[in-house]
Length: 161
Image (tube, rainbow, N blue to C red; front, side):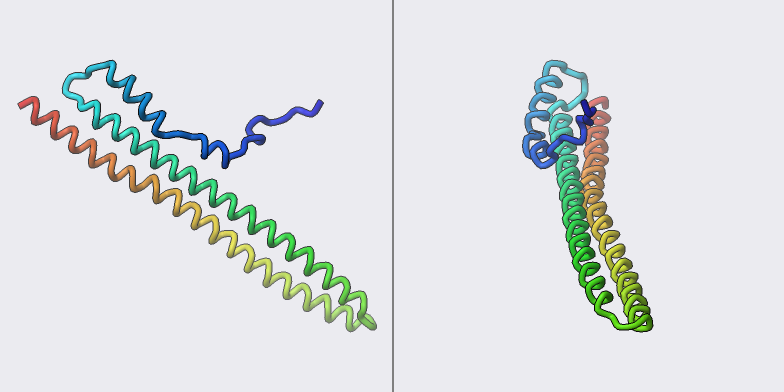
Protein backbone atom coordinates (compact mmCIF):
# COMPACT_ATOMS: atom_id res chain seq x y z
CA UNK A 1 0.00 0.00 0.00
CA UNK A 2 1.38 3.38 -1.00
CA UNK A 3 0.82 6.10 1.60
CA UNK A 4 -0.92 9.15 0.19
CA UNK A 5 -0.73 12.73 1.28
CA UNK A 6 -4.31 13.98 1.88
CA UNK A 7 -3.24 17.55 1.18
CA UNK A 8 -2.06 16.69 -2.33
CA UNK A 9 -5.43 15.21 -3.28
CA UNK A 10 -7.39 18.46 -2.86
CA UNK A 11 -9.12 20.03 -5.83
CA UNK A 12 -8.41 23.69 -5.01
CA UNK A 13 -10.88 24.94 -7.62
CA UNK A 14 -13.70 22.94 -6.00
CA UNK A 15 -12.53 23.96 -2.53
CA UNK A 16 -12.62 27.66 -3.45
CA UNK A 17 -16.04 27.23 -5.10
CA UNK A 18 -17.47 25.49 -2.02
CA UNK A 19 -15.90 28.01 0.37
CA UNK A 20 -18.70 30.32 1.55
CA UNK A 21 -17.46 33.40 3.41
CA UNK A 22 -21.01 34.60 4.01
CA UNK A 23 -21.79 31.42 5.98
CA UNK A 24 -18.76 32.02 8.18
CA UNK A 25 -19.78 35.65 8.73
CA UNK A 26 -23.33 34.55 9.62
CA UNK A 27 -22.00 32.03 12.13
CA UNK A 28 -19.77 34.69 13.65
CA UNK A 29 -22.72 37.09 13.84
CA UNK A 30 -24.83 34.52 15.70
CA UNK A 31 -21.98 33.81 18.10
CA UNK A 32 -21.20 37.47 18.74
CA UNK A 33 -24.87 38.38 19.05
CA UNK A 34 -25.24 35.96 21.95
CA UNK A 35 -22.78 38.02 23.96
CA UNK A 36 -23.56 41.64 24.62
CA UNK A 37 -20.25 43.33 25.20
CA UNK A 38 -20.33 46.75 26.82
CA UNK A 39 -19.40 49.63 24.58
CA UNK A 40 -18.88 47.36 21.56
CA UNK A 41 -20.72 47.72 18.29
CA UNK A 42 -21.19 44.03 17.54
CA UNK A 43 -22.74 44.72 14.14
CA UNK A 44 -19.64 46.66 13.07
CA UNK A 45 -17.43 43.90 14.38
CA UNK A 46 -19.38 41.29 12.44
CA UNK A 47 -19.26 43.43 9.29
CA UNK A 48 -15.51 43.87 9.68
CA UNK A 49 -15.02 40.11 9.98
CA UNK A 50 -17.18 39.54 6.90
CA UNK A 51 -14.99 41.97 4.96
CA UNK A 52 -11.85 40.25 6.29
CA UNK A 53 -13.11 36.88 5.10
CA UNK A 54 -13.99 38.31 1.69
CA UNK A 55 -10.50 39.81 1.38
CA UNK A 56 -8.90 36.49 2.29
CA UNK A 57 -11.11 34.72 -0.21
CA UNK A 58 -10.11 37.17 -2.94
CA UNK A 59 -6.43 36.73 -2.03
CA UNK A 60 -6.76 32.94 -2.09
CA UNK A 61 -8.53 33.07 -5.45
CA UNK A 62 -5.78 35.27 -6.89
CA UNK A 63 -3.14 32.87 -5.55
CA UNK A 64 -4.90 29.83 -7.03
CA UNK A 65 -5.27 31.57 -10.39
CA UNK A 66 -1.59 32.52 -10.30
CA UNK A 67 -0.50 28.95 -9.59
CA UNK A 68 -2.75 27.66 -12.37
CA UNK A 69 -1.34 30.20 -14.85
CA UNK A 70 2.21 29.30 -13.86
CA UNK A 71 1.56 25.55 -14.22
CA UNK A 72 -0.11 26.06 -17.59
CA UNK A 73 2.79 28.12 -18.91
CA UNK A 74 5.36 25.66 -17.56
CA UNK A 75 3.56 22.88 -19.42
CA UNK A 76 3.57 24.95 -22.62
CA UNK A 77 7.30 25.62 -22.23
CA UNK A 78 7.97 21.92 -21.69
CA UNK A 79 6.04 21.05 -24.87
CA UNK A 80 7.90 23.74 -26.85
CA UNK A 81 11.24 22.49 -25.50
CA UNK A 82 10.52 18.88 -26.39
CA UNK A 83 9.44 19.87 -29.90
CA UNK A 84 12.50 22.08 -30.37
CA UNK A 85 14.83 19.34 -29.11
CA UNK A 86 13.34 16.80 -31.50
CA UNK A 87 13.70 19.20 -34.43
CA UNK A 88 17.28 20.07 -33.46
CA UNK A 89 18.30 16.42 -33.16
CA UNK A 90 16.77 15.69 -36.54
CA UNK A 91 18.64 18.62 -38.06
CA UNK A 92 21.95 17.62 -36.44
CA UNK A 93 21.55 14.03 -37.58
CA UNK A 94 21.42 15.27 -41.20
CA UNK A 95 24.71 17.13 -40.81
CA UNK A 96 27.69 16.28 -42.95
CA UNK A 97 31.02 16.31 -41.19
CA UNK A 98 32.19 17.21 -37.73
CA UNK A 99 32.50 20.91 -38.50
CA UNK A 100 28.81 21.09 -39.54
CA UNK A 101 27.73 19.18 -36.43
CA UNK A 102 29.81 21.42 -34.17
CA UNK A 103 28.46 24.60 -35.76
CA UNK A 104 24.84 23.40 -35.40
CA UNK A 105 25.43 22.36 -31.78
CA UNK A 106 26.93 25.75 -30.96
CA UNK A 107 23.97 27.54 -32.55
CA UNK A 108 21.55 25.22 -30.72
CA UNK A 109 23.23 25.99 -27.38
CA UNK A 110 23.07 29.73 -28.03
CA UNK A 111 19.38 29.64 -28.99
CA UNK A 112 18.53 27.31 -26.09
CA UNK A 113 20.30 29.54 -23.57
CA UNK A 114 18.52 32.67 -24.83
CA UNK A 115 15.17 30.88 -24.78
CA UNK A 116 15.78 29.60 -21.23
CA UNK A 117 16.58 33.12 -20.03
CA UNK A 118 13.41 34.43 -21.64
CA UNK A 119 11.35 31.67 -20.06
CA UNK A 120 12.84 32.35 -16.61
CA UNK A 121 12.00 36.03 -16.96
CA UNK A 122 8.45 35.19 -18.01
CA UNK A 123 8.01 32.81 -15.05
CA UNK A 124 9.32 35.46 -12.66
CA UNK A 125 6.86 38.00 -14.09
CA UNK A 126 3.96 35.55 -13.66
CA UNK A 127 4.93 34.94 -10.03
CA UNK A 128 5.34 38.67 -9.40
CA UNK A 129 1.90 39.39 -10.89
CA UNK A 130 0.31 36.67 -8.78
CA UNK A 131 1.99 38.03 -5.64
CA UNK A 132 0.88 41.56 -6.46
CA UNK A 133 -2.73 40.47 -7.03
CA UNK A 134 -2.75 38.52 -3.78
CA UNK A 135 -1.14 41.32 -1.78
CA UNK A 136 -3.50 43.92 -3.22
CA UNK A 137 -6.55 42.13 -1.78
CA UNK A 138 -4.98 41.87 1.66
CA UNK A 139 -3.32 45.29 1.92
CA UNK A 140 -6.49 47.11 0.92
CA UNK A 141 -8.43 45.34 3.64
CA UNK A 142 -5.75 46.05 6.26
CA UNK A 143 -6.04 49.77 5.57
CA UNK A 144 -9.83 49.55 5.90
CA UNK A 145 -9.53 47.57 9.14
CA UNK A 146 -7.24 50.15 10.70
CA UNK A 147 -9.72 52.89 9.83
CA UNK A 148 -12.58 50.82 11.30
CA UNK A 149 -10.63 50.34 14.53
CA UNK A 150 -9.99 54.08 14.68
CA UNK A 151 -13.71 54.81 14.24
CA UNK A 152 -14.69 52.25 16.90
CA UNK A 153 -12.16 53.67 19.36
CA UNK A 154 -13.53 57.17 18.77
CA UNK A 155 -17.10 55.95 19.42
CA UNK A 156 -16.10 54.22 22.64
CA UNK A 157 -14.19 57.30 23.80
CA UNK A 158 -17.19 59.50 23.00
CA UNK A 159 -19.56 57.18 24.92
CA UNK A 160 -17.35 57.33 28.03
CA UNK A 161 -17.53 61.13 28.17
